Image (tube, rainbow, N blue to C red; front, side, top):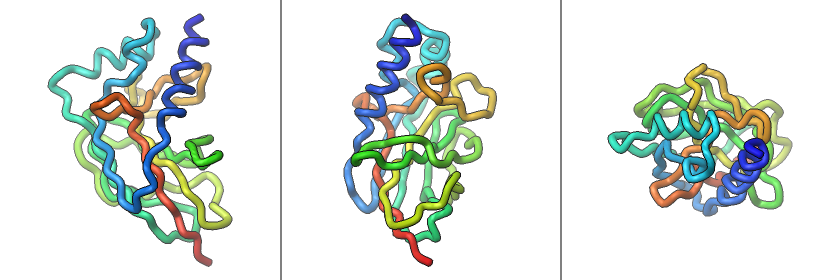
Length: 172
């Protein structure tokens, strides 16, 4: 039952992740996720413990950019606790499978974060950077629903997933 709730929650978070198509997008987020409203699971409990009222929200700034298709650059990301930026491919205009993940980022602001993609983009495409919190504090990105949805996406102050769409123009 918990796995089913986790799967439904993860799918709901990804479905809610449809962001705007702005060329520069800023998403203000906090470590509290919609998962904290669901019945308690290990990951949910850890997220609740991390999401104290004193935590500042996370912020993600990404510009439309030109690349050789192997990397994406995040202008800045501010995290209330350690975490990652996972880059999702686009599937029917919404976040799809993860195609690249940043190294572990410490709390605070990191600028000019370059993420190497697992496979190069073949043509200009839209991707979806998404902020995740290292909930289990193991330094490893773990988010493969339904079985390993541990490092949950961060959410904005209004409860939306902290994700944005960005166009990568592939040259060369």
